[in-house]
Each structure stands twice: as structure tokens, then as C-alpha cells.
Image 1: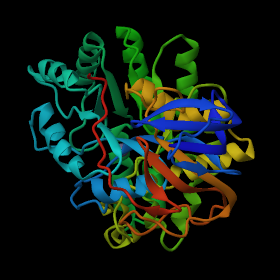
Image 2: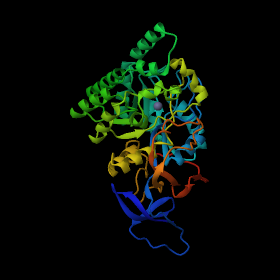
Image 3: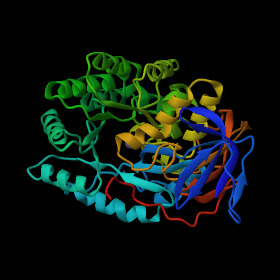
Image 4: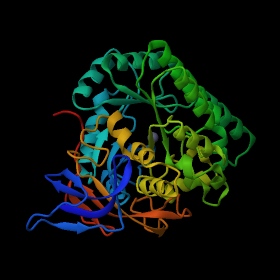
Length: 445
Ligand SMILES: [Zn+2]
């Protein structure tokens, strides 16, 4: 198959090129590729072609007192419509004291329904005498990263955090971390509860103050510096104060990875004052208007590695309790379907260079999490390809089963019309025609 005449984002620039696909791979990229007899040729004149997106942070099939709207089936359909061909999912917590492979085994089962390709992060919800060996054996099955939480039910305390970082150093594994100071947040929540019965959405944001995130980031990076661990991955960095800390430690020469998410670039906490402000309740919360400028600056300064979504969806009915009691509202927002169109719009506006766009939307995630043959348009790489039409659009049709988007007021310049997953045409003119199942991506031969 040959895709012809598109503006292809290749080698960090846009050029008019043809792409030849064979056996799921890109085998040739050139200015004019001749088709063989009976070879199918698709003309994408005036369209853009970019690599399939990789979302390093989704939560499909998650249960947090209530079941998420999206499982791997609906979540992966939303992902494909939005040009994301691979997700790396974060499993929820398992039962108390469960072994590390408990959630991985469960999520491998869930992911059998996935129509896009996927990888999994592990979740370290406690540390005991078998944790090291469990991490070692999961690494052999292609799990390169484990997440720890500094807040929520199965948070790790500092002594266990240091143990886990040391294990990961020895095993050469990435530790993803949800960095927020648990007791600071609990203290402010208690104060709000004592003062008033009305716990409206804005108080969610106020109780999870910026400094609770940046304090946790400072503490973690201090531990990493002390034990010389260079594979910490900070998930969903949101507060400007955290980027000050990130800059400080980068200047000191410490190596680590930073993820931010689309919601912190495109939304701010004013939305909590709207009638349906509860639909934006997530953690970390949306920050004050102007905070996003610090994140864009951090991107320009090379301090951000990936932009994910933390896609974690609940219906408006499930979330509506947040109207009067944010503390009972299931946390999370959709984004897996919206991410690429939003980011490519910013590329077209000149906010991101071609290199920044590719690095942040797919390439760095593939290299950090060792997703073999993924992440960019290149010879020998999986033919995960998106076709984009330039114009003026809004998100008017959403495939996530949560039934809403947080980005409906944003004018887009990019519409994803066609998607190829390992060479198979899975979205055609905006319709899902997928016959291919997603596969588990890892670096094991
Ligand atoms: Zn998350």
C-alpha cells in the first residue's frame, strides 16, 4: 500500500512525501514512490500525515468505588478516533496486600478487548520482602515501569518510597509517581468540611493546593539525588511551583522524566464555577488561569518529556454528586480522544515545533517505556499513521462512553480523518472499520 502526496511529519519537519507500507511496517519514505501492479494507492493531497499518538497515561476499566465509563473496548475506540494508536494504561489498585502481578494479570485480561495497541504500567501499592523479586519477574514479561502514589488509600510512606526507588535502581526500572502531599490535602479538606456543608467543585481545587504537589516533587527528587536514581517519571505535573522545582533539579544535573497532561494546558479552574463544574473534577485539579504559561515555558526549555491525558472517565450522572460534595465525586476526565487534535492545532499555530510535537505526543513515550517499533514515521517502524485535515472544527462527536468532552469550546484546526494501525486502515473518513485487535507492545522478542 502507498499513501501519496501528503505533508508528512518526518525527520522533525514537514515534507511532501509518499509512504510505502508492507507487512505492518513502513518500508519506504520518498518523494515519488511508484506503485506496483495491483498495489493499493491512497491519495492524501493537502492532508497531513503524522505518527500514531502514544498516550502514556490512561485508566481504562478502573473501579474507584464506582466503575469507569470506558473499558479497553470503548476506550480504545475513542483513542483510535482521536489518532492515538497505543496507550500505556495505569491499572487501579488491587485488593490489600495483593502481589504485583495481580493487577497486571487482570489488566491483560481486560485488554483483550482493546482495538488499539497497549502496554501496561505496574502499580506498587505496598512494599514487602517479595516486592523486589516480583518486580524482577514482571520486568521479564515487558513491564518497565511501576507507579507509586503519595496520596490515596495505598500511598507509600517515605521509607517505602526510598526502598522502591532503590529496587528500581538495581533493576533498571522506571518509577512513575503521583506526587501530592496526602496529609496537607486531608487537612484542608477537613477545614472546608468543618466550615460549610456545601463542598462545591472549586473547593476541590483549593484543597489540593499547588504547593502540595511541588512539595512532593521536591521530596522525591531529593531522594533520587541522594540515592543516584535517574529513572523517576513524574506523572501529570500541573502546578507552576512544581516546574520551578523540576528546573532546579535539572540544573543540578539530576536525570528524570516529566509528564504533563492536556487539561493543564487547555483548561483552568474557572470552569469549576460553571453549573456543571463537577465534570472537571480530577486530581491534580485544574490550576489558575496563567499557570499554563509556566508549563509551555517548561516545554520550550526542554523540561517536559510527554503530554498524556490521565483519561479516566465517569458519566455526568456519576460525577454529579460533585456539585455539592467534591469529596465524594469520582475523579477523572476524558482526553484520549481529544489529545492529538488539540496538540496538532497548537503545532499548526506555531506553539510547538515539529520536533516538539512528535517528541511530546509519541516519540519520547516510546523511547522511555521501550515500545519497540513505535513513536514516529520512519523506515522499519510500525505503520501506525494518522491522516489530518486542516480546517475549522469542534469536538462534536465523542466516542468515550462518558458522553462528554471538556474541550467542546475550543476551536480546532485539525481533524483526524483516517488512522492506520500497523498498516491496517482502522478509521476511514471518520468511521471506525477496525477488524484488527490491539496487541501488547513490549521490547521482548
Ligand atoms: Zn492517573
